[in-house]
Image 1 (cartoon, rainbow, N blue to C red):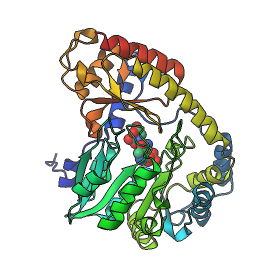
Image 2: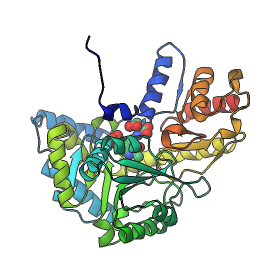
Image 3: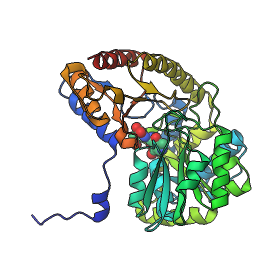
Image 4: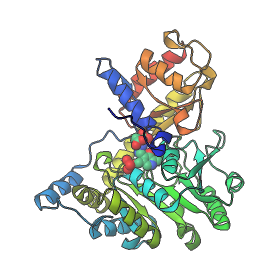
Length: 399
Ligand code: PMP
Ligand code: GLU
């Protein structure tokens, strides 16, 4: 057996913590234990029937071959039509590129725009993959922590202070994974002004755009005038809004030149995303939209429940989520105390291990999101599981 020396790049990155936490929960489940699973952020609903029908039709019609790298013209047009319909934003098909999920889209943006010597500003808490995807591109993540008191919102002053001559890009995610926070239009506009003034790019990850609750509103970052539009790359996809995580369709909306660069990159990496999934995504975007609202209402009901239960947890603090489907709460007051099963933990990672092993509740550690002391609970699951899960979390915290 030859000595295996892995590349510097792959040695530098960590495995996705959300996927690892889900795998750990599954391992325990496979031993016959009933596990209360709140790790992966993926809708528990079936993909709506009319979307599946479109995929079957595509297969029957022989749409089973390579397509243009960045997607078929019909999909690019459908994406443009959906942005015009939903947000009044004008995009040309030449600005659109479809990839194998939004994660792949983010990788394309970072690889096309950033490299050694470039800094990428990431407000924390951030989605697990951001910092590693920046590292994969050879660039340097610059993490800027935000506070629970501010609703985990990056202020224009914080952004200004983090910008250096090497800053290339800001990564924003509203509604946010893991906090569920949603920036107000005014907060976004203030950041947009800084981006224009300081001449930096903005990757706006809008994958949770349709999952908004209460008084919060969604506003696309590209909608604050031409100067902002010109420096914004929107990332989104069908995974969350249409319960299509397994179909692997994400996209970018970007200036034509950047889109061409990403097309070149993808032509050498993966070629087109699945031809069948592309047809399904067209049906999702152009078909009836009531399925999106039906699922949102279910998530809204679960969010209400989760809010109530988080409020009832002893010595736990949180900023109420206004979007996405995550509860994100601070458990650091419990560190060093005796918890359920007699465990004493010193950080959120140990907390997650202990609660999984003793109460069989699977959460994701905030350490993975650049937020020590916090844990994330995905409420993309049924109310019954949420109820039993919170009963167990409460029992665990009470020791
Ligand atoms: N961005 C955020 C903020 C996410 O939470 C996720 C994962 N669900 C993605 C991007 C990637 O989505 P996809 O499954 O389409 O790759
Ligand atoms: N994005 C989801 C999550 O945060 C799915 C898993 C992943 O791709 O990280 O749980």
